[in-house]
Image (cartoon, rainbow, N blue to C red; front, side, top):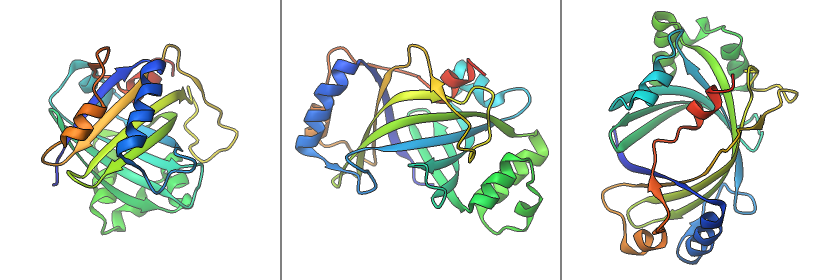
Length: 223
């Protein structure tokens, strides 16, 4: 596993405007962005006891979670992702899903996964069978991503966080999402072995503070 440093900061809308200009001056926009941003829709999974949610709220040091993710409402780009966190470090593995496979998972049909040779798919299948992992909530938000080659740095600004409430029909265009009350702007900084000084300086804000903010947890408050 290739672990990366991951730090999140909860910031104000005003701070985001300042950071956007700073980041544009020293970093490049991610090549997948359209007009500097893209939309993300994620479907998160948890067991009947809400293990993933409880571990996040309790600050458990080592955590694992699964989600299905789609970008810019494009069903040709869907990934099943496994995120593993250990303290301030994180790593992510993913597997491509067809729209039919994603819909099957939403519908609780996972038998086909047992025949896969993909580690992420098999890991998810095992968790579904052994722990009762099931779809819990849709999370939508807008992301502005910036990249910097030295240190393999990625900085993102996430905002307009929305929840699907009780709807988990990931591919259904009629599954509307609503804004999460009092949701913040989230600055996230990721890097490999070192964070270059130019980036460290660019993301400095007196008003920012490290946060354990979780989009999944925030959206689960309203399901």
